[in-house]
Length: 473
Image (cartoon, rainbow, N blue to C red; front, side, top):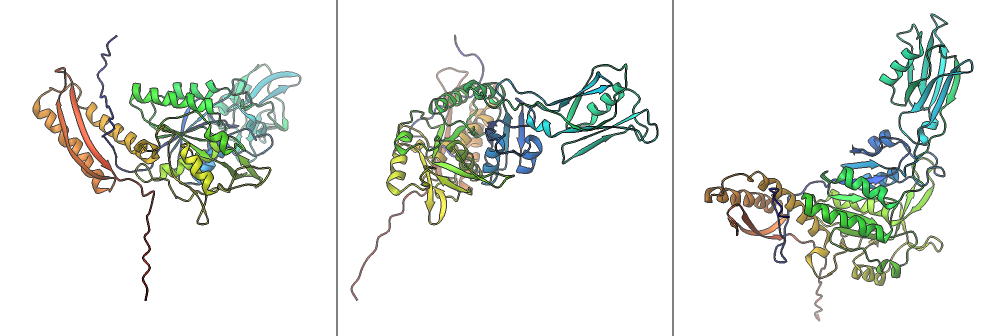
């Protein structure tokens, strides 16, 4: 069937190198947490917002398999400024509950506002009102924030009124009415219980469904999925990003890493590939935010830190030899090996994997590359792919405004000048080294135009040749 939907299509030929204006990149991150909206895109600008939305991983044993807060912590510590987060679950997440009674009759059920174990920290206290002892006041707290409901000091005469007040004002619980025949009894502080984060049995489709249903039409530049470093999964994710780019004109890259204690040989044998994929190595040391204990996380978490480094310098400045702010690296935990030697770095780069190691006393990516199959192609360089994505999105935004306009020479001339105006701005920002005048012509059918750009991006400095001349005195 012929495609009839009007759209702007860009074909990138090997002779075209494309760039775009700079600005902080947007990261999308999918993970698990013990609190917060489920299956919803939540925009986070800093770690304080992250904790407010998803809560800190208070118990490192109970919450060891939660991923979102750790990924966000690594990203924001490395300069991320805009992250679109999605909390997912394996299908069995539940809210904590507490049933309030009158005598032996259940009258009100309190639910954690969100599914997850953080609700087990929430407690409720029911007291007799100080003015009218037959009435009730209720207090809800998570140990940090306390919510008090007293009906302006006179208390509540019915369970319905209590529920109405709490449901309208609480950020910690929601209430269901069991019966209003008997007013709830006074109750000393009691905790909700039975919350489940739904993070223990995730399968690949739990992440990819979030991509399909929630991120497909969102604008983001880099995708991070902390906690999954499986090679086959990386192939699946990249395939979805490629399809999304061609079908929806939405462009992004998947930044991830290798598995825990994965050897160089195993890493080099990974099959996931493409210009929309960057894989970092090795693993990362992370200090638990509450206990202060050090934990070693797989390379997908190191990818969160690396993605932030890319986003901070988006899109034209390469992350090559930029300082990474992490607690340390780990190649093999049992031996304490931390850093790749020069041979390992070169071997990983030849396998199109980003080695991160100690360079001049700091932790840095040796070279920011993609998993593009040809190490001699421009798309081997991660920042060139970033530039390419950025300019495509920018040009499509411009050209979509001309769909439906008359296909006349004067209109095509305006289009060419507008594209050149964008490129001239890029040149002033030293993103584009040079460009040729854009050509806009009628294509093979009278309702189609062809826009041809030729652009030289400002490439990163990867090699420096030093010549020493020795002269006799």
